[in-house]
Length: 155
Image (cartoon, rainbow, N blue to C red; front, side, top):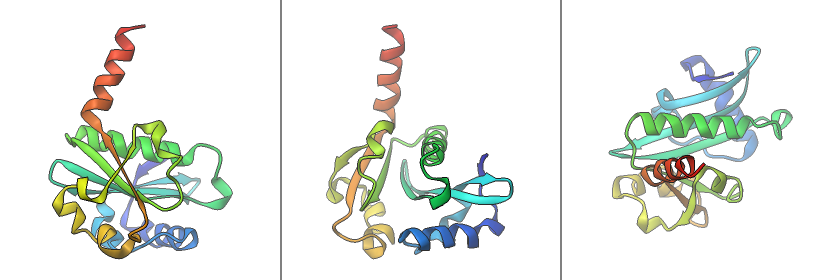
């Protein structure tokens, strides 16, 4: 089950992030915008959103090693993108060092750090939590929605 994270979930989420080699800098400040995959009371995945005006940063998409390969990461990513759409985000950005091939299926494309909004570039993620070598990706939500509408109309 994918649900909004509760404050009591944070230690489990941080443990998952540490085990996966992902940064925990900024998690505490943005934890109110996290989602978790809860399997019978055990947190097996998480994803967070940081808000920067009309843009969002998808961060901390993580799945426990024993829950990989069954779609948990996809469910979490979709839930975070749906939340961004509901709140009127224009675009969602992310930084990744290992999952560049995972995110295009959700509409993410490679971009540059310079293309990210200024306030986002000042975030902990951009300022050192993720290395400078991390790939920056962007999903234009308006364009994604328009493309989906166009595909649906042509059916």
